[in-house]
Length: 254
Image 1 (cartoon, rainbow, N blue to C red):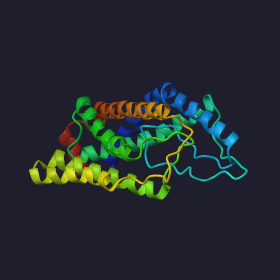
Image 2: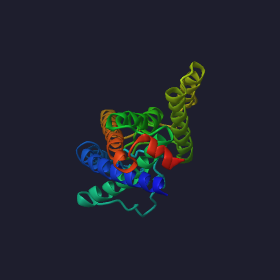
Image 3: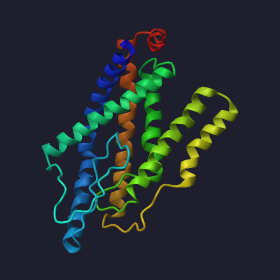
Image 4: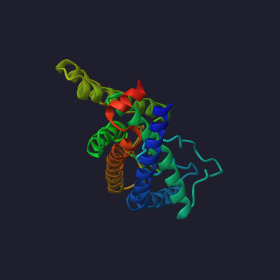
């Protein structure tokens, strides 16, 4: 019970602080691009049909399973937070919930691997989290803006989850097993999802300018990198206050 309590406390503290920084970064990076894309979406709806395009969530460090915002709007528009404080608040709330969730995964995984010895080690773990949850899935399913076409939601979710699991397993084999054969297997696991390929829409036609989408992908990737590095560093810095030495933490885990 002590171990589980400490895991939750470390994850809550690190996840909350990292989410605060992430929300502030998004306010000046991804959110303005989303608002700009929504003007293209509105213009397209005014000149086209009544089928509303999927609404893009804020691109968080939490850019997890593709959002289930696929339903077409027939007469009624789906509720979305108003611009300004309401949008900022709900974005912050989503960041906190997912940030703490990712921190729980990071803390638990690192403890099973021997624990994070300090903030420098934590940053390395954060880079691994970035590779698993943002970089690898983003190579096949880059972040989307409103009004952009997307493949079937279920197919995207299956590919995303498979890519995350394969990348995590591959990195673990490379980092912790130390044999050539297992390292080769790890590389293969990382590469296989991209050989299979992510689900793609039938058409990539979109009212969103290509340069705007490119800016959004870059902004999302950079903010996620900062989020994960900060999250890992905070976990490493906070961990010693709850677990003490690495041997003590392993004793709690046992």
